[in-house]
Amino acid sequence: MHTLFRVTAVAVLSAGLMACNQSPSSNPNVELAKAWVTAGADSREALMGMVEQNMAEDGLLFRDRYVGFGFIWDNQRGAEEGRMIVTEVIADSPVAGVLQEGDEFVSVGGVSVSAENMERLPFRGQPGEAVSAVISRDGEEMAIEVSRGIVSAPTTKAEMLEWMASGDDENWGPEKWELHEAVGQGNVVYVWTQAWDTDEVSGLPFEAHQVTRMVFNESGKVTAIANLSEDRFVLEQTGYAISR
Image (cartoon, rainbow, N blue to C red):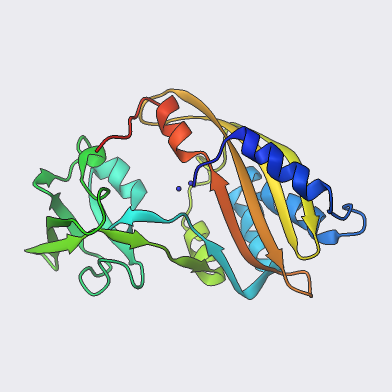
């Protein structure tokens, strides 16, 4: 999903690129980028095939930066059981060396972890601020304290495939999706898309634009991919507010 931009910014970006881009017929990277983004919206299987065949072995997906702890947890189990179990600790993040895979959060900042409280857990907030938590490891509870920090970690090709292999086919992709434009120059391609979907928690519909930037090597393999998305706009459409 999570860098904000407005539609006008997208239009300006596209206009600038159009002035110097190569046509799809002379730049195969543009067509591959379009096929890649389309596969991602269509199905988990289609995207996995695209990554396996067209991503360089040293290629990286650059995820959104955020201020927080720096771990990934089992969202599906959390939704079903109201539990937060760590599946990955991000290298060089605030919790690196503190958390381990398999740790389970019992409470965060005095708020108990439950299906009802998932959105109230104070992981996000001011960087540098210490947050106390209780975790369970190997059946024993232990207290930890973590100072929030900036989390920025790329994902490797192998990690992407591992994540997608555990994905849910039924909930993959948006309800509606449209590719507006793909432009590029040489080894850099930008793809502008728009998606419409419904928030599972609030039941409210939302729409959002996204720009995907892809970098190719001389062999036509993807070496870097990153997205600009309207995360805050999505939250506002589904009833959430940004507060301090």
